[in-house]
Length: 163
Image 1 (cartoon, rainbow, N blue to C red):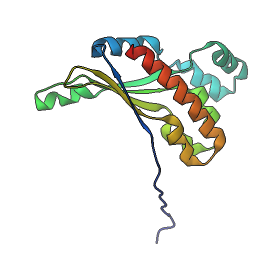
Image 2 (image 1 turned 90 degrees about the vertical axis):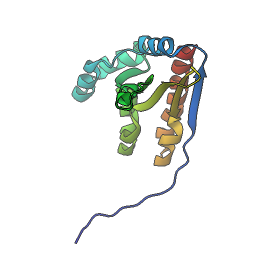
Image 3 (image 1 turned 45 degrees about the horizontal axis):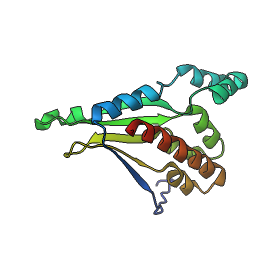
Image 4 (image 1 turned 90 degrees about the horizontal axis):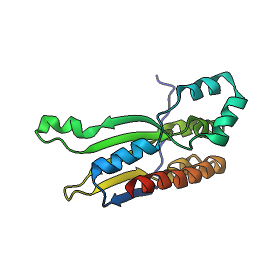
């Protein structure tokens, strides 16, 4: 006999699409140049409770980092037709910690996922789910407010790269 229970509820997510007239390689290069690779020292500082080090990052560091890149277009080589398509994990572990301290469920969406791909018509497209709509399902206004902050920061970074 199991003691586990399962619950579920429908949620509404706002999906965002940013279409660029710039070529895919140019947009990809721009986002990868604009967002630094995650500094592993941040995790160490968070784990060690280094408030001064974290304050320095908050005050002077980047708002977003590139956690990971997956080349989904390469996976299509099996079909004989590679495509320009990458998925990024973008976020900031400091920002994530400000959410998860209120609700550990926020870890499900931090870091955020963003897809960049090239359409058949040659347009470069970013797609992602709006952070505030992901985090609002947790029912904690403190977490949702940070999601709104991420809405603005992520959109600004992607629009800059899209040109």
